[in-house]
Length: 469
Image (tube, rainbow, N blue to C red; front, top):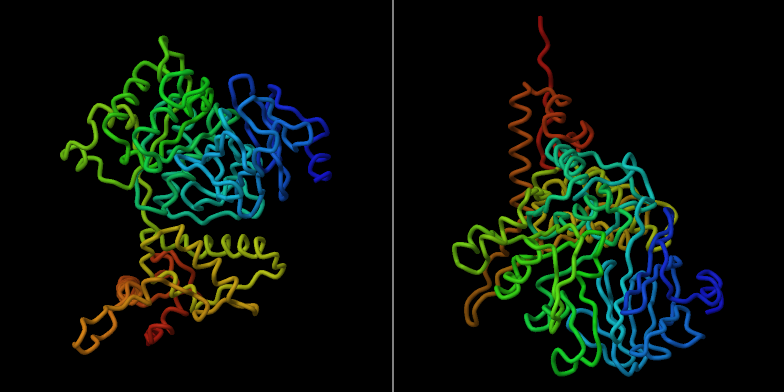
C-alpha cells in the first residue's frame, strides 16, 4: 500500500487539524478522547486503520488494535475488521473477524472507543452547476458528473426555500415518501449554510435498539454500565459545530424522545454516568416518511418534540408529480452509471423508453429511477437504451393463485395504470390546446419530440390543424 501512504503522507498521525479544502472527494474523520483528525482520501484503494506505525492511518489509542480494520474505498465503500481485540461496530452491529460491511458516507464506525466517519467534502462545485436538492438520491452534492436538472415549478420553489433557510439556525423537518431525496436535501441545506466546513452527521433513528441508542447518541463515562471500560464520546458530540441529520426520526423510541427534547431545549448533552452536562453546538435537521400527526394522536410521538423539530417543514413531492424532471435525471444517472462501469460512450435514451419512464408511477421515487437507469446501462450494449432495457418492478407483479384453482389473469401493473393515466393527460392537454402539439407539450412539461413519441407509443393519431378557407 505504498502508493496510498504516499498519497496520505508518510508518517501520517491523528493529530488535530483543519479539514482539507475544496476539491477533495472524501474525508476521513477520526474522533476519540485524545484524538481528532481529518484526512483526505484517495478515489480508490484499501487503507489499514490501527495503532501500528505501519498502518496507513495511525490511531494512537489503547483501545485500537495495531491492525484494527481495513477501509475499502469503493465503490462500494466498506469496512472490514481484522480480528481486533475491542471490535469494529457499525450502528448496533459488531463485525466478526474478517467480515466486510458496506457503509454510507456519514455513517459512524466504532473502532474500540474511537469513532471514524467517512464524509463527503464540501464546496467542490458552485451552486450554478450543482444538482438541485431532492433531485439525486445517494449520489452526493458536487459530484463531478453532475448535470443541471430541469426543475418543475414546485422544485424551483423548494430550491429557493432551501437557499433562504440554509443561512439560519432553525430546525428543519423534511417530509416525503421514501426515495424522494430527503437526505440529499438535508446535505444541501448543510452545504449552503455557515456550518458547511463542520461535520454533517447522519443518524438513522430506526437502525439502533433503544438501549444502545442512548449510549451511542450521548456517550458514556467509564464504569457507567457493565462493559463501559473507558470513557466514550457520543455521536452528537461528533457533530459539534456542524449539522446533525436525524433520519427516520419517527422511529425514535419514546424514552429517547424525552432526552432528545431536553437536548434541543437546553443545547447540552449529558453522557451516561456523567455528573455534569456538556454544551452542544449543532443544528438539527430531521426527516420522516411517517404521518407524525397520526403518530402524535396514537401517543407514539411526543407533540413537544415535534414542535421543537418542526421549526419549519419542507415537503418534497414524489417523482410522479415531477414528470418533467425525469428526462434530465435519467441523463444524469446514465452518466453516473457509465462512470461506475467504466464505460466511455454514453448511450442515449430512446423516446419510447422515456415515454415509459414518464408514464410509470415510481413508488420508489428518485432512488428507484436511479436503480432502473443504472440497470439499463448494464443491459444496454449498443448506443440507445430502449424499452427492452427497462426493468420496472411493478410491471412483473402477479397474483398467486390458491392450490386447485385456475390461475388468474396477471395483475394489472402500476406501470400500465400510469400509462393509461398519462395517455389521458395527453388527450386532455391536446384538447385544451386545440390540438396544438407545441403548446400541449409545454403544458405537460415535456418536449414536443417526447409528446410525438408518446402519441405513437399509445397509438394516438397526431392532430392536424384545420385549414381556414
